[in-house]
Amino acid sequence: MGLFLKLHRMTNTTKLAVISFFASLYFYNHVGTLYLQTRGLSLLQVNSIWTIIMLAALLAEVPTGVLADKIGRKWSVVIALFIQALGEFLYLFADNYFVFALIAALAGVGYAFFSGAGEALVYDSLPAGNRETQMKKSMGFIDSWHQTAFFVAPIIGGLVVSQLTISKFLLAILMTSISVSIAFLVSLTLVEPKKNYTHPEMPPWAIFKDGLKLLFTHQRLQWIVAISIFTNSLSNSLLNLYQPYLVQHRVSSSVVLGVSLSIGSLLAILLLRNINKIEEIVGQSRALIIFSLVPAVFYILLAFSSSVWTLIPLFILTLSVADLKNPLLSGYQNIHIPSHNRATVLSLISMLSKLYVAFASLAIGYVADYSISWAYLAIGLIIITLSLITRTNKYVHPSI
Image (cartoon, rainbow, N blue to C red; front, top):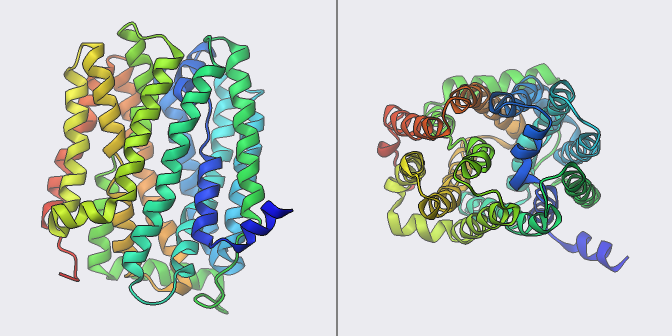
């Protein structure tokens, strides 16, 4: 009862940080690819699981975004967490590619419910005045708790999955299911920000049309969206492939795999919590290009590394910087989006991003079945090329 009252007194940002922590406590994440391989899946099929999630989310993105703008962002987040918890419990019984694919499609729908609504809920819960800076701090805070879960879960998971056996894998999956269920219960305490957001008396098609018009006519927003999509670090492929990559180099210890993921997440936490200070140091005009190219360089070094003594540190460094630019982009794009259809517009942006990630992940998975080194090299070169094409280095924030 006391804990419930404490939750009610928290801000939406703090609650979403708590939700992000428990929803990200994947105790089997550090061996997830190895588990799927024991179920007979190839690396192409493993990466295609993420592609299915993205495509399912893509199809559900706009409808769920419009729904969030009609029923409220809180209930969209609640639905998202319920679907995620259900998917994790179903994961306990999956034993072939077809079942994994069905669960991935369900996960994609849940992902779509959260993507636009979660960010919109944060932004509209902030007090008026200098929201852009507050948004970057809030998203950095939430992302840091997401990374905290990535730090904690592999350490505990490494102890739970002491042997790479089905029974150990399933125990870690069960623990994950319970953790996500806690996140779902916390989501019920979220508060709709009525002061900054009211549900407009507009039909869903009008909200969608209004959001689409903004994307087609707002050139600066289009540029930010292009940068966001095409400089995506494809961190899902980094996580999917590092496990078999290290196993290829004779690292088969679950503890080593877990600790590597934990240290990378810890560094990411420290960087995300200080993202504003880092941006001030490097300069707003150079922040995006630096945060885009640094992960790409690490990917390329990872591809050419052949010693375990360099592979593990490079993986840790790549993971720590992979998503640094995301809180900045969140702040940059939200100042251009009106509140009444924010979830819809963010869902449209997320839909485009998912389309890119879905097909890129499939291509990387295809390459990885031949060579994981070549797959990492491809990711690095793609990021560098698209960063230059989108002129990320020319971006200057309008406040300058």
